[in-house]
Image 1 (cartoon, rainbow over the protein chains, first blue to last red):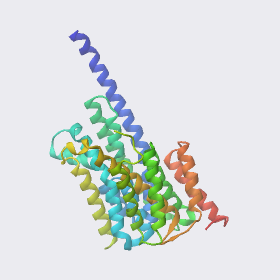
Image 2: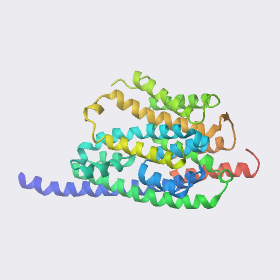
Image 3: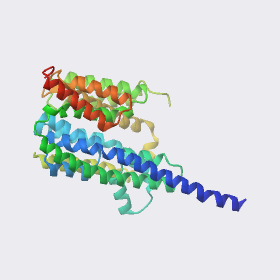
Image 4: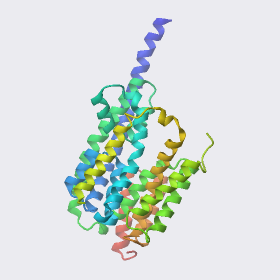
Amino acid sequence: MATTSESTEPADAAKADAAAWRMSLSVGLSVAAYGLSFGALSVAAGLDVWQTSVLSLLMFSGGSQFAVIGVLAGGGLAAAPSAIAASTLLGARNTLYAIRMSAIIGPGFWRRVAAGHLTIDESTAVSTAQPTLRSQRIGFWATGLVIFIGWNLTTLLGAVLGDLLGDVRQYGLDAAAAAAFLGLLWPRLTALQPVVVAIGAAVVATALTPALAPGLPILAAAAVAVIVGVFNWFGKRA
Amino acid sequence: MNLWTVILLAAIAVLALKLAGYLVPQSLIEKPGPSRVLTLLTVALLAALIAVQTLASGSTILVDARLPAVLLAGVLFALRVPFIVVLIAAAATAALLRLFGLAA
């Protein structure tokens, strides 16, 4: 009995490890390509190549980075407080991921700091999809590192290319920025509740645009999520 | 506030939120309420950014080449076309509409 379980378990574990590596690489490489568009759009929004690269190195969270440049592109430096608030609120979901990853990552101060920096949608998703603790750790670190390296290299490349383009409207880059947000939103529209919140938030932001300073309509739309979430309207009964 | 200040403040805030998750007790996430609000918050902010990025020009609402480009992007995402291809298609749509003077 004992010998059979010992002979099958390592094989299963090795299979799980290999599957975690494969998933990490495929997710990591496809996501890294987003960096190209971020770099180009960031330069189009008025940031220089260095500022764009610092965002990818230090902030390292796609949604929040797109939010900073999106709000600045619309409202300039006058919208700076809204740009910071919008990116911070979008980054709040990473706290949830970090709480979820905490037990998987294990102890050690520097290991947890490094894990914190790599805690994003994709590293958490790949990790929590694995069956064993070891493959969950492989999934997290491999996905996080592949995306970190790829995201920063492609950001730099995109920023340099964007710098050469000049007039961004002529190339439709303003429309591409909106499409980028749509691409980040799309996988989250998996149930009625998020769809209702998305439509409500879009309507609120559009309706308030003529009334409020640029950036503020986006923050006001966040109230839709708080109200629907607190009362659990349109949600499943838990 | 200059551009560097904005970038550093925003980056540090986002990084601090990630690190905070490794410090707070696990019991916080067990409650469905806060977790649901945070998940919906992401959806609301992204949707608001799409709306503003597509329709706003400063403080006015302006329907121009961006709208058909974003609608096309929605169709392509629904067809599971890769992210970067959709972005190029959206940019090309707006660029061509402007080139031929069909939209502002």
